[in-house]
Structures are given as C-alpha cells and as structure tokens.
Amino acid sequence: MRPIDVKALCDNARFSQFHLLLLFWCAVIIIFDGYDLAVVGIALPSIMREMGIESASAGFMVSSALLGMMIGAVFLGTIADRIGRVRAIVICLLLFSIFTAAAGVTSNPVTFSIARFIAGLGIGGVMPNVVAQMTEYSPRRIRSTMVTLMFSGYSVGGMVAALVGKAMIERYGWQSVFLAAGVPALLAPLVWKLMPESLAFLARNGHKDRLKRILPQIDSTYVPQEADYFALQDECAAAGSPVKQLFLDGRGTSTVMLWVAFFMCLFMVYALSSWLTKLMASAGYSLGSALTFVLVLNFGAMIGAIGGGWLADRFNIKHVLIVMYGLSAASISMLGFKVPIEALFFLVGLAGASTIGTQIVTYAFAGQFYPAVARATGIGWASGVGRSGAILAPIVIGFLVSQSLPLQQNFFAIAIPGAIAMVAICLIKVRRTPPVGEMPVAAKAKPV
Image (cartoon, rainbow, N blue to C red; front, side, top):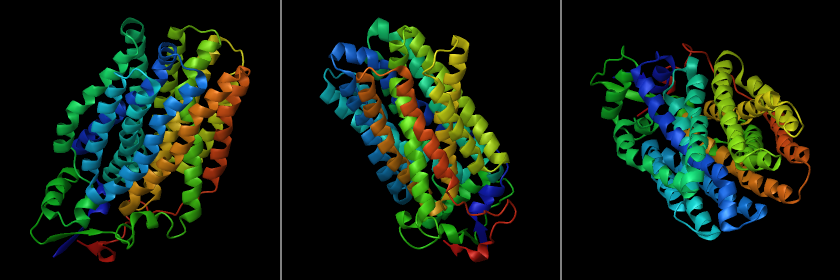
C-alpha cells in the first residue's frame, strides 16, 4: 500500500489550471455575494424616502440581513465540515440570490427585513466556505495571495452595485437593483457540477475514486495506483467535534482574540458600507457624488486585499494585519475633517483598503490558523461572532446620525474599533508551521 498525504500534496503543488478555475468560481460567487451585501447601502437613501422611515429604523432594516449572516456563518460554516462544502456553497448561493431579489418586490420595512434576513443566511454562510476551500487547495507559498485575490471579488461586487445603482435607481427605482440580484441562482447547477469537493471531506469519508480524479489535476506528477490510500495529518484527523478543535492545543485565548478582531473589523466595514453614502450626502455631496465615494471605497478595498495578501505571503501575516488595522483607525478618523477633494478620495480609498481589505486578509489569517478538520468551522464561528459587530454598526451609526452630531464624531465612532482590533491581533499566539518540504510524513497521519 502507498500512503498519500493529500495536504502535503496540495501544499507543495505548483499553480495550475485547476487552481485558476477554482479561483474563478470562488471569486464569481464572492462578487455576487458582495453585490448582494452592498446593494442595501447603495439604495438606502431611496428606500428611506419611498417607505418614509427615519435613520434609526433604517439601521434596523439593514441589520436584519446582518443577523441572518451571523446565523448563516456559524451554522452553514459548521455544517459544511459534515455535509461537504460544495453542497453548503450551493445552498448559500440560492438563498442570497433568490431572497435578495425577493426584497425588491416588498413594499414595507417588515417584509423587506424578513427577505433580507433569509438572504443574509446565504451571504454569511458562503464566506467561510469559499475561504476554507481556497485555503485547502492553494499551494502554501501563495496561499494568502490566492485567498485575498479571490476575496477581492467582494469589492468588485460592491463596485458593480454602485455602478448599477447610479445607472438604474433614479431611472427604474431602487427595486431594480434588488431584482438584478436573482441572476446568480442560474449558476447553481454549474457550481454543483464543476467545483471540486473539500479534500479533507473526501478523505474522511473514504471517497477514494474522487480523490484519484482530483489529485492529478492538482499535481501532475501524482499518478494514481490501485494500492493508494489517502492520509490526513494528525492535526487534521484529531478526535472531537470541529467546534472543540477551536479551543484545543492552546488556541482558546487566540480564538477569542480573533473573534474580537472580526467583531471590530466588521463593525467598521458595515458602518461604512451602510452609512457612507448617507453621511457624504449629509455633508453636502449629491447622490451621484456620494455613490462615487462607494466606488472609491471598494476600489481601495480591492487594492488593500490583494496588496495585503501579497505582503502576508512574504512577511508575517500577523504583523501585516497589525499595521493594516492601525491604518484603518487613522484614515477613518480623518474622514470627518474638511480636506481637498483629492485628499478626501485618497482617505476613502485608504479606509476601504484598511477595513474591507483588512477583513479579507483576516479571513486568510483565520483559514491558516485552524486545522483542516475545523477550518470552515473556525472561520464560520469567527465570522458569525463578528457579525454581531456588523449588526450593531448600522444601528449605532444610525442612532448617531439621527442625533445630528458633527460629522467628525460619527467617523470617530467608526474608527475606534480599528484600534481595538489592532490590540486583539497583537495578543493572538500563532503556532509555527513547518515550511514547504518539511511537512509531516504519512506515517504520522491517519489513513482513510
């Protein structure tokens, strides 16, 4: 019998067409996910005007999707390690596309919030699963870059939402941008057929034939043989539930600190995503100009995500995150001050790079922090706990906006969590992982 360590094979593989196709499908899903998430912030002024609601009530409407995202991230992230990631991803895709479109045919805050809550289950659930998928399949030397490059689709989705909003809201009404979100549901059969299943899931459940079809696509030097059996390293085959793994081997305190970082970062992300358009409009900018700031925010996020991933593959990812969180606190604090328009665009772009971009790098960090058997669970729980920050952000900032406070104080309230997240990342203890080529041999693994 010949033992094959599937994780070591993926870690040492060269980038190939297989990785490119996986990156494509995961990025497409994230683009649609980002669109569905950003579309409410884009349409919020029009929704408030048509439904006749105030800022505080609008904050609760936005948070309905975020509550769904919190539940979806925890439940669909955890269950994916048991039912398979592809199945969980398809469920999420159908949920967020169909029910975001359904929100476009509602006419009151209650039914709108219900539709967005159900859509949020899919929006939140898909994130930990695609991150776990890319982390598992990517060669180690470019793993952070692959994850952040994929997740830059989130920013692309936000920019598409802003462009579609500028083109359609004033002409066809806010409902049009929600109805357009139903298109991704048509891709569900292709995702089901073409996306490869998690290797850890296949190995744990004894799907040897499927592994023999997938592994040669990852590493062309591997030639399947009848006597092959597939092994998982000790860390991937540890006993106990996936949730229990989050607190074993000294990971308890670091898991909590990671949750704090997710909470604070998602607070900043959703505060900006939900209220930047409204805050800029209240500062005297037209709706079109305010939407341009959303474009700049998401363009900066894409640069921050890709650049942060590139830096994380070359330097210590923890140190990269510390710097990025520091930049988020500084850049957002300065948005409330009167500066030349060019400087304002730069600050908005930097805020996008250091909030949305940093969140994407934090997802990559979480994916590398946890063992494969609990990877989607770890990312899902961090994302789910963090969603409470996302839920609070629109409500808190909505309340502050309703108090007619100076613009600087609104932005200070959004910036403070960046400093807290920076401290939390400093307190995370990262275990040293052996470099490529020094992976444990299959003799230390559990055969399946």
